[in-house]
Image 1 (cartoon, rainbow, N blue to C red):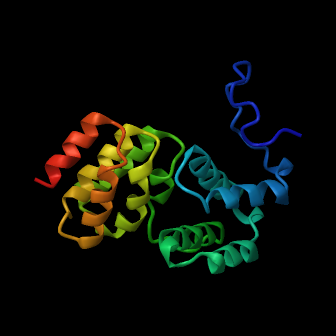
Image 2: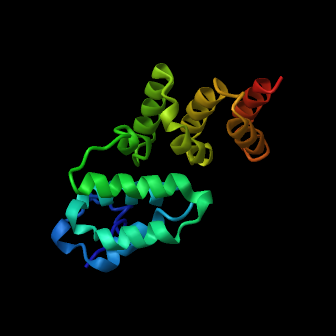
Length: 181
């Protein structure tokens, strides 16, 4: 059996990332759930999307146990897991842009963030802060542009200030410095 991502470099099959739901077992589901516990990465994005696609195959009790394990520093992840629960149970979801914000496709992520910025939808701030560490420059820049509109918020100020020392892209770093001038 092949696992999610085993054929990432397989050029013969451009649909390497399509999961046959019938072949997904509890071990794979746990692996996907565990990737959501860690920092934002490509595996995080793929896992989030995959769990939404798996729907009711994802055990509710396991998600609830993970939420209990997370401390207060992971409040956005608690809400992310709650979103997954609501989604798989066909309940109303408050943050309808989360699948786009955490899409494996960086273009989809950046566009969703721009839409949030256009609407100045501050409800998403807690979900955007972790994207300051997004692997893609355009996503990080979109997040910074939105958050900089709310620089007077002490949490945002602190997060942007901390990110200033971590930003590897010199253009983004220079633009971020201007936010504090």
